[in-house]
Length: 240
Length: 240
Image 1 (tube, each protein chain N blue to C red):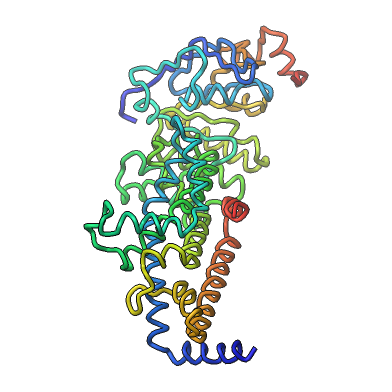
Image 2: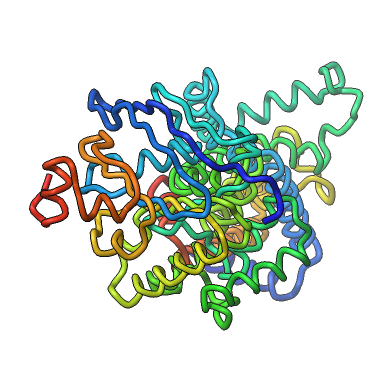
């Protein structure tokens, strides 16, 4: 009990005393998460849009696969990325194992299926309603994808926030490919996982408070977006 | 409208089956230039499907849609369609039209200018920055007409454009349809509204259970129906 209260007190001192180590970890974590989400959007938004409007053999199988990949275990992704990037691996020459770049790649692999699958659902329901009108206006399927993404922007934004939540919360992938190196690849989740074991409860609790706050802020943002939005956003919410 | 005409339009033996039902049964139809052709018939007669096939949105099971001179996308670019329920993008009134004009390969500045002209044309000039979906039903349908007109079509397909509107809104839509005709455009209008058909039709096709029972100049069909079905419909006694 005293551990807990002392821990909280120390945590708040670190947070509001702007402890350099703590804030360094927070900033690095956010950088890695944002890079991962940006990379995921670059791939997932057009890919989800394409899966929604194009019809081809094996489309259903691809959709089932993408949906299944939403549940990838982070440690497995971390292991695979580790094997790819390790010195003897196929991408070993890049020499980026145990860097923030490697962590962003691993998280992007976790987030991309989420962005892709949710975008596919959103765009497909819009395409169902808009197809005849857009075709009448001379829009090709390819040209329709950015139109539909923009029209479903509030729902798409909630999909992206869902992806961000996944990146911010996971520990298994970044701890394997990042290694939790102090001042270099130490993120909020890896620090909590390892510092707790070493008895550094103040740091772990301080980071925990930040992570929980971040989760609340993200969900509040998603909720506010949903409040002033369209039926297709409700679809994403229902699917989560 | 200096470009060569794509009219007359000939529909040759158009048939369509759906779910084991014969929606359209060997329809022949000729659409003459600068006239308003009304496809008249009770609900479920196949009017919408006929217009969508003529416009190229749906492929018939058999039969030919033959425009003069042009085919495929080139012919479709000279056409526009207004649907019973307006499908508007989730953006401003003006942006809806700009999007449609830009799809014709027109530069943004010119498209914006054209969009403003189109809004004035339908009397929505002061609503340019409103979200399109905040408009009333009648205003939304006028926006659909503005969007269609902005593309300078020679041929307009109007699928029950007033069926979901109150009398005042219907009246303003009819004024737009009359103006389109005065400009020398050709309209193909489907309706089950006998009074509207009387006011607007130059030529008439009477559709019943997927078959074109009568076709010809509207005046002679109204004064001298040949089939018992049209006779009954004109008396308001044909219910199915």
